[in-house]
Image 1: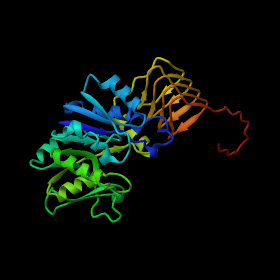
Image 2: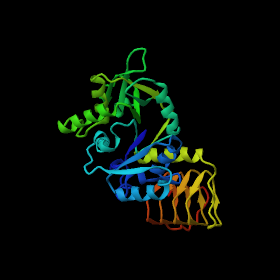
Image 3: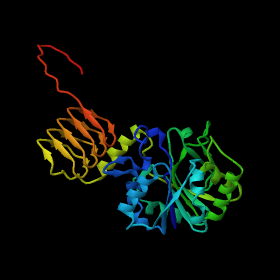
Image 4: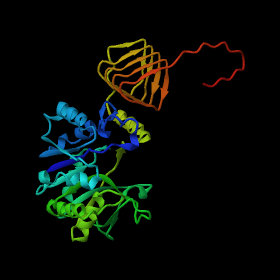
Length: 336
Protein backbone atom coordinates (compact mmCIF):
# COMPACT_ATOMS: atom_id res chain seq x y z
CA UNK A 1 0.00 0.00 0.00
CA UNK A 2 1.15 3.53 -0.83
CA UNK A 3 0.49 6.67 1.16
CA UNK A 4 -0.29 10.12 -0.25
CA UNK A 5 0.15 13.14 2.01
CA UNK A 6 -1.10 16.41 0.48
CA UNK A 7 1.20 19.10 1.89
CA UNK A 8 1.31 21.77 -0.81
CA UNK A 9 -1.03 24.44 0.56
CA UNK A 10 -0.16 27.87 1.94
CA UNK A 11 -2.06 27.42 5.22
CA UNK A 12 -3.64 30.87 5.21
CA UNK A 13 -5.52 30.27 8.47
CA UNK A 14 -2.16 30.12 10.24
CA UNK A 15 -0.82 33.42 8.89
CA UNK A 16 1.54 35.04 9.83
CA UNK A 17 3.35 31.82 10.78
CA UNK A 18 2.93 30.40 7.28
CA UNK A 19 4.14 33.48 5.44
CA UNK A 20 7.61 31.96 5.40
CA UNK A 21 6.97 28.22 5.83
CA UNK A 22 4.40 25.61 4.74
CA UNK A 23 1.81 24.57 7.30
CA UNK A 24 3.27 21.06 7.81
CA UNK A 25 6.52 22.70 8.93
CA UNK A 26 4.93 24.70 11.75
CA UNK A 27 6.63 23.65 14.99
CA UNK A 28 4.59 21.99 17.75
CA UNK A 29 5.47 19.76 20.74
CA UNK A 30 9.09 19.25 19.75
CA UNK A 31 8.95 18.97 15.97
CA UNK A 32 7.11 20.16 12.85
CA UNK A 33 3.57 18.89 12.23
CA UNK A 34 4.80 16.64 9.39
CA UNK A 35 7.19 14.94 11.84
CA UNK A 36 4.34 13.94 14.15
CA UNK A 37 2.39 12.58 11.16
CA UNK A 38 5.32 10.51 9.86
CA UNK A 39 6.13 9.17 13.34
CA UNK A 40 2.63 7.68 13.46
CA UNK A 41 3.20 5.94 10.10
CA UNK A 42 6.34 4.02 11.00
CA UNK A 43 4.43 0.93 12.23
CA UNK A 44 2.37 0.90 9.02
CA UNK A 45 5.47 0.26 6.89
CA UNK A 46 3.97 1.55 3.62
CA UNK A 47 5.46 0.62 0.27
CA UNK A 48 6.03 4.30 -0.48
CA UNK A 49 5.10 7.70 0.92
CA UNK A 50 4.26 10.31 -1.71
CA UNK A 51 4.43 13.85 -0.36
CA UNK A 52 2.63 16.40 -2.51
CA UNK A 53 4.59 19.63 -2.10
CA UNK A 54 4.37 23.14 -3.46
CA UNK A 55 4.43 26.19 -1.18
CA UNK A 56 7.98 26.55 0.26
CA UNK A 57 8.51 22.92 -0.73
CA UNK A 58 12.26 22.99 -0.11
CA UNK A 59 11.67 23.16 3.67
CA UNK A 60 9.56 19.99 3.74
CA UNK A 61 11.96 18.15 1.44
CA UNK A 62 14.99 19.12 3.52
CA UNK A 63 13.37 18.12 6.83
CA UNK A 64 11.94 14.79 5.65
CA UNK A 65 15.17 13.82 3.86
CA UNK A 66 17.14 14.56 7.01
CA UNK A 67 14.98 12.73 9.55
CA UNK A 68 12.90 10.13 7.67
CA UNK A 69 14.77 9.05 4.54
CA UNK A 70 16.08 5.99 6.41
CA UNK A 71 12.58 5.05 7.63
CA UNK A 72 10.51 5.36 4.43
CA UNK A 73 10.76 5.23 0.67
CA UNK A 74 9.76 8.87 0.01
CA UNK A 75 8.78 10.47 -3.29
CA UNK A 76 7.99 14.16 -3.79
CA UNK A 77 5.41 15.33 -6.32
CA UNK A 78 5.09 19.03 -7.07
CA UNK A 79 1.59 20.50 -7.23
CA UNK A 80 2.39 23.60 -9.26
CA UNK A 81 -1.12 25.01 -8.99
CA UNK A 82 -2.96 24.72 -5.69
CA UNK A 83 -6.40 23.75 -6.97
CA UNK A 84 -7.79 21.82 -4.02
CA UNK A 85 -7.39 18.51 -2.22
CA UNK A 86 -8.77 16.48 -5.11
CA UNK A 87 -6.25 18.03 -7.49
CA UNK A 88 -3.46 17.48 -4.96
CA UNK A 89 -4.13 13.75 -5.06
CA UNK A 90 -4.72 13.79 -8.83
CA UNK A 91 -1.12 14.88 -9.54
CA UNK A 92 0.13 11.62 -7.95
CA UNK A 93 -1.71 9.49 -10.53
CA UNK A 94 1.35 8.15 -12.37
CA UNK A 95 2.87 6.89 -9.11
CA UNK A 96 -0.23 5.46 -7.44
CA UNK A 97 -2.72 4.07 -9.97
CA UNK A 98 -3.05 0.30 -9.65
CA UNK A 99 -1.95 0.23 -6.00
CA UNK A 100 -4.09 0.51 -2.91
CA UNK A 101 -3.58 3.95 -1.36
CA UNK A 102 -4.08 5.69 1.95
CA UNK A 103 -4.58 9.46 1.86
CA UNK A 104 -3.64 11.32 5.06
CA UNK A 105 -3.96 15.08 5.34
CA UNK A 106 -0.82 17.06 6.10
CA UNK A 107 -2.35 19.16 8.89
CA UNK A 108 -4.14 16.50 10.94
CA UNK A 109 -2.48 14.59 13.78
CA UNK A 110 -4.27 11.54 15.14
CA UNK A 111 -3.94 10.07 18.60
CA UNK A 112 -3.96 6.60 17.09
CA UNK A 113 -1.35 5.33 14.67
CA UNK A 114 -2.19 4.70 11.01
CA UNK A 115 -1.65 0.97 11.43
CA UNK A 116 -4.77 0.89 13.63
CA UNK A 117 -6.73 2.69 10.89
CA UNK A 118 -5.50 0.18 8.32
CA UNK A 119 -6.73 -2.69 10.51
CA UNK A 120 -10.16 -1.04 10.73
CA UNK A 121 -10.17 -0.72 6.94
CA UNK A 122 -9.18 -4.37 6.50
CA UNK A 123 -12.03 -5.44 8.79
CA UNK A 124 -14.48 -3.70 6.45
CA UNK A 125 -13.90 -6.48 3.94
CA UNK A 126 -15.00 -6.17 0.34
CA UNK A 127 -15.46 -2.54 -0.65
CA UNK A 128 -13.93 0.15 -2.86
CA UNK A 129 -12.46 1.90 0.13
CA UNK A 130 -12.94 3.15 3.70
CA UNK A 131 -13.20 6.63 5.16
CA UNK A 132 -12.42 7.64 8.73
CA UNK A 133 -15.31 9.49 10.39
CA UNK A 134 -16.22 11.09 13.69
CA UNK A 135 -19.29 12.89 15.04
CA UNK A 136 -18.72 16.66 14.94
CA UNK A 137 -20.50 19.62 16.53
CA UNK A 138 -20.50 21.89 13.48
CA UNK A 139 -21.02 19.57 10.49
CA UNK A 140 -21.37 22.47 8.03
CA UNK A 141 -17.60 23.03 8.44
CA UNK A 142 -16.68 19.49 7.34
CA UNK A 143 -17.10 16.97 4.62
CA UNK A 144 -20.15 15.02 5.77
CA UNK A 145 -21.01 11.33 5.47
CA UNK A 146 -24.56 10.01 5.26
CA UNK A 147 -24.87 6.26 5.83
CA UNK A 148 -27.28 3.75 4.40
CA UNK A 149 -29.84 2.68 7.03
CA UNK A 150 -28.54 -0.20 9.17
CA UNK A 151 -25.31 -0.34 7.20
CA UNK A 152 -21.70 0.81 7.34
CA UNK A 153 -21.93 1.64 3.63
CA UNK A 154 -21.93 5.29 2.66
CA UNK A 155 -25.00 6.59 0.86
CA UNK A 156 -23.79 10.12 0.22
CA UNK A 157 -20.85 12.46 0.74
CA UNK A 158 -21.03 16.26 0.71
CA UNK A 159 -18.39 18.92 1.28
CA UNK A 160 -19.33 21.59 3.86
CA UNK A 161 -23.10 21.42 3.27
CA UNK A 162 -25.27 24.39 4.29
CA UNK A 163 -27.92 21.98 5.62
CA UNK A 164 -26.06 18.84 6.77
CA UNK A 165 -27.94 15.55 6.59
CA UNK A 166 -25.84 14.10 9.43
CA UNK A 167 -23.20 15.11 11.96
CA UNK A 168 -20.73 12.45 10.82
CA UNK A 169 -17.64 14.35 9.70
CA UNK A 170 -14.81 13.08 7.50
CA UNK A 171 -11.77 12.80 9.74
CA UNK A 172 -9.03 13.27 7.13
CA UNK A 173 -7.86 9.70 6.46
CA UNK A 174 -9.02 7.66 3.45
CA UNK A 175 -8.28 4.20 2.04
CA UNK A 176 -8.90 3.65 -1.68
CA UNK A 177 -8.76 0.16 -3.19
CA UNK A 178 -10.22 0.95 -6.62
CA UNK A 179 -7.58 3.45 -7.68
CA UNK A 180 -8.19 3.01 -11.46
CA UNK A 181 -11.76 4.32 -11.08
CA UNK A 182 -10.65 6.87 -8.49
CA UNK A 183 -8.17 8.51 -10.86
CA UNK A 184 -10.56 8.16 -13.78
CA UNK A 185 -13.06 10.27 -11.83
CA UNK A 186 -10.43 12.82 -10.79
CA UNK A 187 -9.28 13.20 -14.38
CA UNK A 188 -12.90 13.60 -15.54
CA UNK A 189 -13.36 16.36 -12.96
CA UNK A 190 -10.20 18.20 -13.98
CA UNK A 191 -10.82 17.92 -17.71
CA UNK A 192 -14.37 19.21 -17.30
CA UNK A 193 -13.57 21.88 -14.72
CA UNK A 194 -15.90 20.39 -12.11
CA UNK A 195 -15.09 22.51 -9.07
CA UNK A 196 -16.77 23.22 -5.77
CA UNK A 197 -15.94 26.56 -4.09
CA UNK A 198 -13.30 27.12 -6.74
CA UNK A 199 -11.43 23.86 -6.07
CA UNK A 200 -11.44 20.20 -7.07
CA UNK A 201 -12.79 18.49 -3.96
CA UNK A 202 -11.77 15.00 -2.90
CA UNK A 203 -15.21 14.57 -1.32
CA UNK A 204 -16.88 15.22 -4.70
CA UNK A 205 -14.65 12.63 -6.40
CA UNK A 206 -15.62 9.97 -3.86
CA UNK A 207 -19.30 10.88 -4.22
CA UNK A 208 -19.01 10.46 -7.99
CA UNK A 209 -17.49 7.01 -7.45
CA UNK A 210 -20.50 6.11 -5.28
CA UNK A 211 -22.85 7.29 -8.03
CA UNK A 212 -20.96 5.02 -10.45
CA UNK A 213 -21.55 2.01 -8.20
CA UNK A 214 -18.62 2.01 -5.76
CA UNK A 215 -19.22 0.88 -2.19
CA UNK A 216 -17.42 2.78 0.55
CA UNK A 217 -17.52 1.94 4.24
CA UNK A 218 -16.48 3.88 7.34
CA UNK A 219 -14.43 3.38 10.47
CA UNK A 220 -14.47 5.50 13.59
CA UNK A 221 -11.62 7.84 14.45
CA UNK A 222 -11.67 8.38 18.21
CA UNK A 223 -9.82 11.68 18.20
CA UNK A 224 -7.92 13.98 15.91
CA UNK A 225 -5.92 17.13 16.47
CA UNK A 226 -6.52 19.92 13.98
CA UNK A 227 -3.45 22.11 13.42
CA UNK A 228 -5.20 24.44 11.00
CA UNK A 229 -5.41 27.61 13.10
CA UNK A 230 -3.74 29.24 16.11
CA UNK A 231 -6.21 28.22 18.84
CA UNK A 232 -6.32 24.57 17.82
CA UNK A 233 -2.53 24.56 17.42
CA UNK A 234 -2.06 25.49 21.09
CA UNK A 235 -4.68 22.92 22.15
CA UNK A 236 -2.87 20.24 20.14
CA UNK A 237 0.44 21.28 21.65
CA UNK A 238 -1.03 20.62 25.12
CA UNK A 239 -2.39 17.21 24.17
CA UNK A 240 0.83 16.05 22.54
CA UNK A 241 2.97 17.23 25.45
CA UNK A 242 0.71 15.32 27.85
CA UNK A 243 1.28 12.16 25.79
CA UNK A 244 5.07 12.45 25.90
CA UNK A 245 7.38 11.55 28.73
CA UNK A 246 8.69 14.59 30.64
CA UNK A 247 10.97 16.46 28.29
CA UNK A 248 14.69 16.68 29.03
CA UNK A 249 15.98 19.90 30.55
CA UNK A 250 18.93 21.39 28.62
CA UNK A 251 22.27 22.04 30.29
CA UNK A 252 22.04 25.76 29.56
CA UNK A 253 19.40 26.43 32.24
CA UNK A 254 20.53 28.97 34.82
CA UNK A 255 18.54 30.09 37.88
CA UNK A 256 15.29 28.97 36.23
CA UNK A 257 12.27 26.79 36.94
CA UNK A 258 10.96 24.27 34.39
CA UNK A 259 7.35 23.13 34.94
CA UNK A 260 6.51 19.98 32.98
CA UNK A 261 5.25 19.10 30.49
CA UNK A 262 7.58 21.01 28.20
CA UNK A 263 9.63 20.24 25.11
CA UNK A 264 12.90 22.12 24.76
CA UNK A 265 15.05 21.86 21.64
CA UNK A 266 18.82 21.65 21.23
CA UNK A 267 21.07 24.54 22.16
CA UNK A 268 18.33 26.47 24.00
CA UNK A 269 19.53 28.85 26.71
CA UNK A 270 17.18 29.72 29.60
CA UNK A 271 18.30 32.28 32.17
CA UNK A 272 16.40 33.48 35.27
CA UNK A 273 13.06 32.38 33.84
CA UNK A 274 10.03 30.18 34.50
CA UNK A 275 9.08 27.89 31.61
CA UNK A 276 5.91 25.82 31.42
CA UNK A 277 3.66 24.10 31.72
CA UNK A 278 2.66 23.20 28.15
CA UNK A 279 5.46 25.05 26.41
CA UNK A 280 7.48 24.02 23.36
CA UNK A 281 10.72 25.81 22.52
CA UNK A 282 12.60 25.04 19.31
CA UNK A 283 16.37 24.90 18.87
CA UNK A 284 18.87 27.76 19.28
CA UNK A 285 16.47 30.03 21.21
CA UNK A 286 17.51 32.24 24.13
CA UNK A 287 15.10 33.20 26.94
CA UNK A 288 16.03 35.60 29.75
CA UNK A 289 14.12 37.03 32.70
CA UNK A 290 10.78 35.78 31.38
CA UNK A 291 7.76 33.67 32.31
CA UNK A 292 6.33 31.55 29.47
CA UNK A 293 3.44 29.08 29.66
CA UNK A 294 1.07 27.35 27.24
CA UNK A 295 3.05 28.63 24.29
CA UNK A 296 4.98 27.54 21.21
CA UNK A 297 8.29 29.31 20.56
CA UNK A 298 10.18 28.92 17.29
CA UNK A 299 13.85 28.50 16.42
CA UNK A 300 16.64 31.07 16.84
CA UNK A 301 14.35 33.43 18.74
CA UNK A 302 15.36 35.76 21.56
CA UNK A 303 12.92 36.63 24.37
CA UNK A 304 13.72 38.77 27.40
CA UNK A 305 11.78 40.52 30.16
CA UNK A 306 8.38 39.20 29.08
CA UNK A 307 5.43 37.31 30.52
CA UNK A 308 3.89 35.21 27.73
CA UNK A 309 0.84 32.97 27.98
CA UNK A 310 -1.10 31.22 25.19
CA UNK A 311 1.27 32.65 22.60
CA UNK A 312 2.79 31.47 19.32
CA UNK A 313 6.14 33.01 18.36
CA UNK A 314 7.80 32.16 15.06
CA UNK A 315 11.44 31.66 14.06
CA UNK A 316 14.14 34.34 14.26
CA UNK A 317 11.98 36.70 16.32
CA UNK A 318 13.34 39.21 18.87
CA UNK A 319 11.02 40.14 21.75
CA UNK A 320 12.18 42.53 24.47
CA UNK A 321 10.03 43.86 27.29
CA UNK A 322 11.05 46.14 30.11
CA UNK A 323 11.17 45.85 33.86
CA UNK A 324 8.99 48.15 35.95
CA UNK A 325 9.95 49.78 39.21
CA UNK A 326 7.00 50.48 41.54
CA UNK A 327 6.44 52.31 44.83
CA UNK A 328 2.87 51.35 45.78
CA UNK A 329 0.91 52.32 48.85
CA UNK A 330 -1.73 50.36 50.79
CA UNK A 331 -4.95 49.17 49.10
CA UNK A 332 -3.57 49.80 45.61
CA UNK A 333 -4.84 48.04 42.49
CA UNK A 334 -2.71 48.05 39.35
CA UNK A 335 -3.19 46.22 36.05
CA UNK A 336 -0.62 46.04 33.24
